[in-house]
Amino acid sequence: MKRRLITFEGSEGCGKTTQIARLKERLESLGEQVVVTREPGGTALGEAIRHLLKDAPEGRHMGARAELLLFSASRAELVGKVIAPALDDGAWVLCDRFIDSTVVYQGSARGLAMEMIGRLNDFATAGVRPGLTFLLDLSPEKAAERLQARATKDRIEEEDEAFFARVRDGFLRLAEVEPHRIKRIDADGSPEAVAEAVWKHFTEAFVL
Ligand code: Z5A
Image 1 (tube, rainbow, N blue to C red):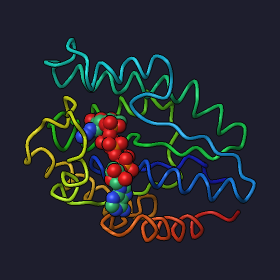
Image 2 (cartoon, rainbow, N blue to C red):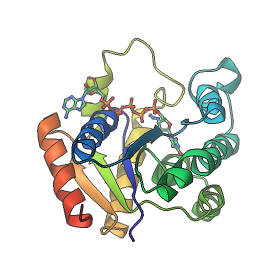
Image 3 (cartoon, rainbow, N blue to C red):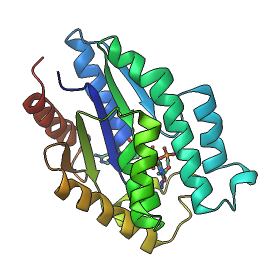
């Protein structure tokens, strides 16, 4: 059976949280069991790592390799403690970011070796892979507009325009390489239009 791990990817502010909530509601209304989680985070250890990665003064000047290892540690804990047990229970797991974010942010944008990132992703997930991934594609300009309302920026959000251009290109390239798993959706539509596109791909991939 195809794995019931569904991941949502894209640039900051592309609407992942919004769409995960909508898909959860739709699946639950059909009597399905759903677990929602996020990366980095989703466990007590993972949330502490999230704080280090985003906001803690101790993390402010971390190097790219330390950053990669922290994302990987958070993922290992999440897969072991939350994702794998939920999948074993037959639940759908909707995860806000997963392995593709590491390939894109630490690989395409930071320039770390893809081969090492692949090995760390394999190690951290023990081979657990998404059955379907939604790439909510939004231009960096539109994403910035949506996030204007937020009072402060975290460590990664402070990167420059060129960094976020590499992020977007990296995601688009991944979607071209793995079209069966990664479904690109134009995230500039209304929340309702994006949710309908998500549902269309979902029902094409899975029989409920
Ligand atoms: N990262 C990494 O480098 N390596 C890794 O391996 C992993 C992550 C796993 C996590 O940040 C950071 O870690 C992220 C990548 C990096 N850094 N960046 N930049 P995060 O978890 O704090 O945040 P995020 O994942 O980047 O995005 P977000 O802030 O959670 O946004 P979102 O969930 O994608 O969007 P949203 O909250 O649903 O919507 C944002 C706003 O837009 C909100 O006001 C909504 O009401 C509005 N919205 C949503 N949909 C629409 C539509 N369709 N139209 C108009 N407005 C909308």
